[in-house]
Amino acid sequence: MSRYNIDSPEKYSQLYIESVNEPEVFWSELASNNFLWEAKWSKVLDWDFRKAKVSWFKDAKLNITINCLDRHVKNHPTKTAIIFEPNNPDEEYKSYSYSELLTEVCKMANVLKSMGVKKGDRVCIYLPMIPELAFSVLACARIGAIHSVVFAGFSSSALAARIVDCKSGIIITSDGSYRGKKILNLKKIVDEALEICKSDQKVLLVKRTNESVNINSKRDFLLEDLIVDVDNFCDAEIMDAEDPLFILYTSGSTGKPKGMVHTCAGYMVYTSFTFKNVFQYDDGDIYWCTADIGWITGHSYILYGPLSNGATTIMFEGVPSFPDYSRFWQVVEKFGVNQFYTAPTAIRALAKQGTSFLKNCDLSSLKVLGTVGEPINLEAWQWYNKYVGRSNCPIVDTWWQTETGGILISSIPKVIPDKPTFATKPFIGIQAILLDENGNELKEFNTVGKLCIQYPWPSIARTIWGDHKRYIDTYFSAFENKYFTGDGAFKDKDGNYRITGRVDDVIIVSGHNLGTAPIEDAINEHELVAESAIVGFPHQIKGNALYGFITLKQEHENIDDIKKEINLLISKKIGPIAKLDKIQMTNGLPKTRSGKIMRRILRNIASKEFDNLGDISTLLNPDVVKEIIDNSL
Ligand code: PRX
Image (cartoon, rainbow, N blue to C red; front, side, top):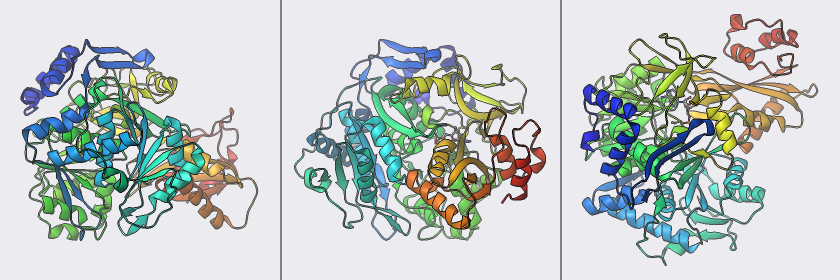
């Protein structure tokens, strides 16, 4: 990628200008020079944001796994591709060279084929962070099946909704998963999900915890039985540039999750280019992203970005607190990690434990630190910088989304200086703009506006699976001819962006993107609940936590029991990540005269900003506000 190595501020400016002045020339040359294609494109870009239509590299043919695996096997077969570090440090780690990884992926691909999976079929993957998760994802890509990875912390109903939405005929899962001290029986959750789906699915079962699980012989297939009969090689299916590579669900402002669709070529080009440059990955470096492959960060920056660059990437099964809070730093020392990428919520949780857990760990291999998923507060940034980076590692605060496929705004080590709490500058090709309520460009510094992107980049999602209208409505209708991110942001006088947070009904809790609507839907299923509203409030570790205001149909004595039942219901319908930290029972919710719940008021109450409620006299029921304030938690 030498011409495309961003190694100085001048190079960044030069490439940025090229990418904006002549985007098609820029991306065409970059794609041509850095990837293997079976056929080149007839047109670089076709787009119309008004219809949410974007297509890159029309008619090009490729397979992303040839770019992630075969070409590196040819050049350096024994180089380590993936290091798997288990949950328990007493268990031996595993590493897979590029050549071994290709074989594992091919075997898994052949197993899927033997189960009848074909190009275009959707394969739901519900696995812990074990090597088979990587093999499964890449095996789907190998044969042109569309993977839909569901984070293995989601409940059976959430899993079922995702299986039904994209009509996956097969679910790959494991008996159980290890998370710190806990063992979670994933197979049981899948069994429950398939009860809900009421359609014919096959299950491919991977053994991890070796606990006993229910086996339905008509439906469930053991990987260990099937894998002995398959070949070690599988030809890569040749895909069209715009064929879907995967679906990944993200929360929205209605109860139904949005299946974001990413396609083969554009996604590959952009994640590969950003990985190389944002992390300044050098040949031989050991890179570690602590995310789960169940989220977009894992897709783009544990698997596809690193592997397309021939990098060595670590997959970590565990949690930062097990066996103790030195776990991350032990792993950094063990493998000599050079780039370390994690979430602000993890940094805050670790910082709370003090510095003793870092003391005996050698972190001198670290060159670049990164954060993702939510705004990082100054205190956490400073702790990360001082104790993990020893004031010697640039911190890339990478802003992006499931929808964007790759990093859109970030500093670049030694090129774009970091600035605490600022994501800083748009990456090459990213034409960011801040708009006011009326859609006019906000030119003043330090004024918050709505963050939009006004030109396509290669890895923008192409649609919402099965619902293109919702894709248009959610992202392309607020402002004409712009992609609206749903985030607020401002710029300093040097053009550095600071993301201030969501401006819609999505709340980021511990870096997880949660829509309020599905949580409210879950609560409202409780037979005693009349109405509910969920808002976020600042939380020391999680960034935001959830506060529920709930009105019951009638008075009840055992409020504590009801609160417990409500959280259980949320766990069951969505997953434990969506549980409420605070629940306040109210006699009513503040509403406009047209009946809309005034969340702004509830947000201010939850954040204890009682002086900042604005004019409440126009409410349908202004009296209820005082009562809510008096009883607030
Ligand atoms: O609000 C922004 C926040 O996370 C949202 C996207 O969430 P998700 O699709 O789950 O993807 C997370 C991983 C890419 C964004 O709309 N967000 C993400 N990164 C940052 C951030 N907020 C502030 N700073 C960031 N670096």
